[in-house]
Amino acid sequence: MARKYDFLVIGSGLAGLSFALKVAEHGTVALVSKTKISESNTWYAQGGIAAVTSFPDSYEKHINDTLDCGDGLCDIETVEMVVSEAPKQISELLKWGMRFDTTPDGTFDLAREGGHSEYRVLHHKDRTGTEIMRALIEEARNHKNIHLLDHHFAIDLITQHHLGSTVTRQMDNIECYGAYVLDVHRNEISTMLSRVTFIATGGIGNIYQTTTNPVIATGDGVSMVYRAKGLVENMEFVQFHPTALYNPGERPSFLITEALRGHGAILRTNDGKEFMHKYDKRHSLAPRDIVARAIDTEIKLRGEDHVLLDATHLEPENLIAHFPTIHEKCMTLGIDMRKQPIPVVPAAHYLCGGIRVDKNAQTSIKRLYAGGEATYTGLHGANRLASNSLLEAIVYADRGATHALENFRSFTFNEVIPAWNDEGTRLPEEMILITQEFKELQAIMTNYVGIVRSNLRLKRAFERLEIIYRETEELYEKSVVSTQLCELRNAINVAYLVIKMARRRKESRGLHYTLDFPNKNRIV
Ligand code: FAD
Ligand code: SIN
Image 1 (tube, rainbow, N blue to C red):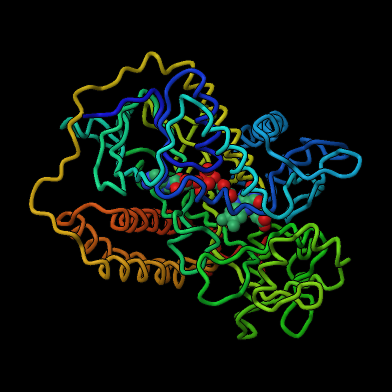
Image 2 (tube, helix red, strand yellow):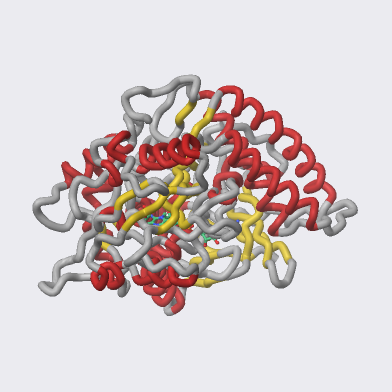
């Protein structure tokens, strides 16, 4: 039997939870999350959320910093809209119980990160995401209209395709009626029907060998929308965070927040020399694409495994008070950041492209909205400004909720959707086939589609990926559906989109840097 909800929300990070809380006053909500509710990129966010809250900062400065980072590809109207709606969304977070750090005089304790010309990042120590999730999960658990379904994996969106119609990317009347969802513990696939579906499935970091993202980030939402023939854009812009802790074998990589550089920490080579002056006048606080490429260049030139982030000159008590999580983590590896520099390397961190949405968070598929890291809104362009992603997630959840509430009653449940079709002889797959393919995918993306690319590397990546794509599709056809197999399929799909869009771009811009078209204005 199909389950019916006014709103089906897929994903329980900031985008999904805040959308759910905003629509729940007016209808029933199922919020599905593929592992535990808290596991999300949001949970791990450290630095904070950017918003203009006081003089001498201004919307104009925040807008200009965002445009500058975006390297000419931001949508200016979107940037203006998001920046000017930020303070209202900060108030909403406070209303839900979020605790931002404040100074003794009661104003927000603002931090600074790369690319920001002012101190404007609101935070909760160095674990802002964990505090956001604490507050929102508590609110959602207490809401009678929200059904939190953990360990529920969305496999595919339901459209006319499932009623036997041919659906093409050129069609402008594709409709979403809900999703097929696997209850991971019971191993049952339900048909979940909805008036409105909201995708908030986050990023794709796990297509790379080294990432700051938790294992949930496999691009499921982007891939589901692409399979349903929705529009996906700007996938070539994958952001590498310059400073993940160098600790070989640890997955995900532990992040060393950019706020530490905002606090005064300095990047150095292993012989103690500052090097960022060679690359940008903002030194260690240049935009992320520039810093990550500079570190990559230094590591390759010198044949070393990492560079160093030096905080030893900073006032020790203040340092620990602001960055307790980083201090604790470093101490587990025997590094006392008050006395020793921290070894760091770049790691895949954030997807700037994704599902195309308009200013109301509507995708190209009717009745389907999306928000957060899974989307392409035009805010980030070719490179995201630090701490603008939590902001984007909450602004677009709000805009999507407002628009969906105006329209959802006119969308009826589609009662003739068939149950999930699992016919034919299907056998449980051998796990080694999945894990090995995943490792191959990560090696291809890391070696050929990383911080520095070239036509030849991208061509190689495309040809290698085709092989594992074919093998995985064959496996999918004959196997029992499982989370791991679906994730592999989705990860291959988003990797394909990254490579395809990277090959199409005949220039270096922002995060997409290619040896065949060097950009002398911006890069190393
Ligand atoms: P997520 O928070 O990633 O949530 C995705 C949800 O979707 C999860 O619940 C997941 O389980 C669920 N899901 C995925 N696929 C499925 C499926 N098939 N079925 C069911 N559920 C599914 N940004 C900032 O602005 N400031 C920061 O300080 C900052 N620090 C960061 C630090 C780290 C270590 C990382 C990794 C990211 C950081 N970012 C930061 C980026 C930011 O955290 C994310 O972009 C943002 O939290 C994304 O929110 P989201 O709601 O879109 O997705
Ligand atoms: C960080 O704290 O350095 C991450 C901030 C971000 O990804 O926006």
